Length: 132
Image (cartoon, rainbow, N blue to C red; front, side, top):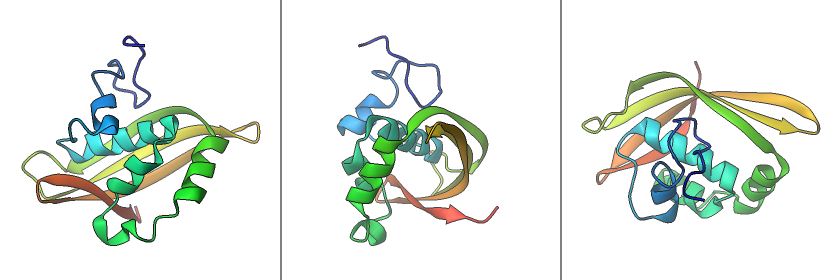
């Protein structure tokens, strides 16, 4: 549906927001846009996108089956971006503090993470969670 709201929380339609990233027709220009698209990938269970947007050094160790199971077992209920440091178009690194909410086993959970992102060859990648 063209008017479906994007799960990442921007308020835009999925078609205009994260869908082009998940479909591979464009790439996020900021760390925050990548983080939001990765959340949408969990919601949409687009595991290949999660792997390809992971820092290349870590892609071989990515557990696609476990990630797919975790994404499918949860009902994703929302994303809040709490803080962004750097990660703009001209930056090479950035961090995004976010909270992802999901239902699991009948209980609401919040995953809070400070994520580090890095740009390589003009493309943003998720590197790791860092201590706050």
